[in-house]
Length: 114
Length: 115
Image (cartoon, rainbow over all chains, first blue to last red; front, side, top):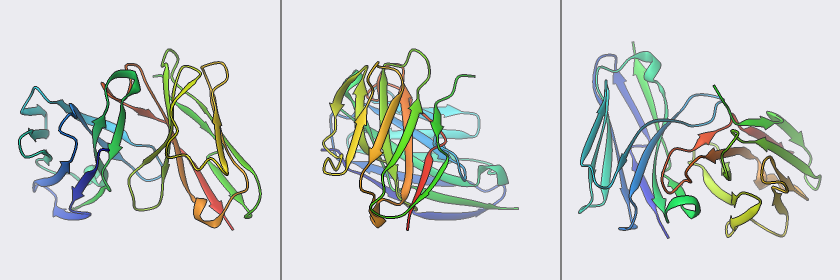
């Protein structure tokens, strides 16, 4: 089955700096890679996703890159703000469509210091 | 904005007792998932439904856990008897196209503490 590894487990940056979180996956058939943000006491919420036919996607201060050959993908947050502080999870799909499932990484706790 | 509803938000119980969690997915979402999230870890899939049918329950400890979605809408996850190691956040999620294709919408979770 699919296995997703996420690094680092914790990340502390100064406000305005960039943050990068990296994930690797094992199933070469995976074709959908979402990133979720989880704030304290809440469920994860999608912030950006990328599909296997795309190498990079950007949404304002957030970008995701995908290297299918190496089976890794990364989340990039630029100009970090205190409200970016949260736990971030990457995920990769196993299977497709309605029978597919998302396998999550272990999470990265991001702290943005004012 | 439509949301996934879960209850209770918090549950404290003693080991060997029975507990139940309820989830109401976003209207029109045929796929429903129960995840368990241990503190400091990522969500782990317990069971997956497509309408009222179980698609995958390979990670569900069936000696003590059960899940149902009788009418293909809301769902219940039950633990009987609860053990200390069951303390975790239980997250319900639903998807319009299925997790293999698109976004999962999560509820706020039910936090279980077993004493």
